[in-house]
Amino acid sequence: MTEPDTQRSNIKDFLTSRRARLRPEAVGLPAGNRRRVPGLRREEVAVLAGVSPEWYARLEKGNIAGVSEDVLTAVATALQMSEEERTYLFELAHTARGSARKPVRRKKSEAVDESVQWFLDSATLSAGFVRNGRLDVVASNQLGRALHAPMMNSETTLANGYANFARFHFLDPAAKEFFFDWEGGAAATAALLRAEAGREPNDKALHDLIGELSTLSEEFRTLWATHNIRFTHEGIKRLKHPVVGRLDLAYRSFDITQLPRATNEMTIYVAKPGSPSEEGLKMLSSWAMTPNATPAAG
Image 1 (tube, rainbow, N blue to C red):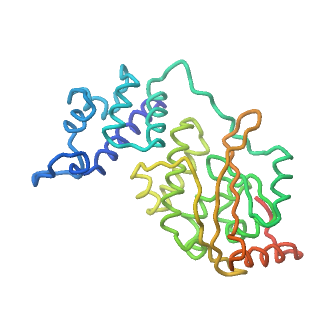
Image 2: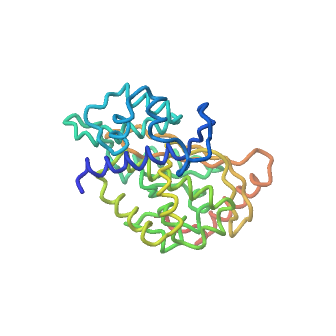
Image 3: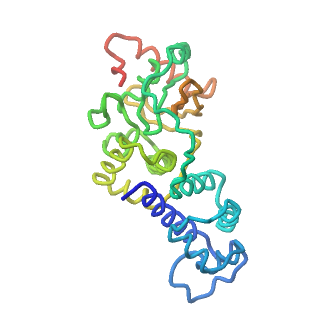
């Protein structure tokens, strides 16, 4: 299947999934008792978007040629898409059209500038790492490696020499012990990969990863089929660390701007000052500095 064909199929599945999740009463329509499928009907979405039912049916089949950005915006509004979902839909549409004017490709750098590593290493009470769009860990500081010791030590996790969050999450049973909210993390991981697949449809390594996860993990296959996407990555992470026990950490990700442009993001984990988790991080930092305690970086 060619790239435009794949993206047309993704558009079809994405729009269908967004329509199925939207209840009629949420848009002011009667629920009725003769609905054979969940969510809105195609003709109802067409009315809400201000287009003909035939036009919308054609769009939902992935026939994107001739569809203006105004129509896509109207459909996104009718389906109550988030800003991230709108961005994802436009990226799919752009690729499906096979336009000669391609969006700017951001280089998938596997190496970070040495100043980025210096920054990571200077954050002695923050666990930090850098990941690419495939969720490979391409750089980290000592505390970041110690915090993610179960993943860094997992042979299942390694791919091309780098630890990978998605492979750890779905393929290593230790992940369900490490993450208190494994289900929430699994959903976020699949959504991040789905968004990356929309941005980078030609990334063979990404397609190989998705294929591997789909083959080996029923849980991943189920989440992948929801077509949920996620661009931002921040919140609270609750971990059960094998050395220091429970840690409740706030985390936030930041784009790294370097030339050539890269998809890499830096993520920093911190603990609330004065909390038991801060004491846990301090203990983990001391443990990480003892000989042979910290697992080797990917």
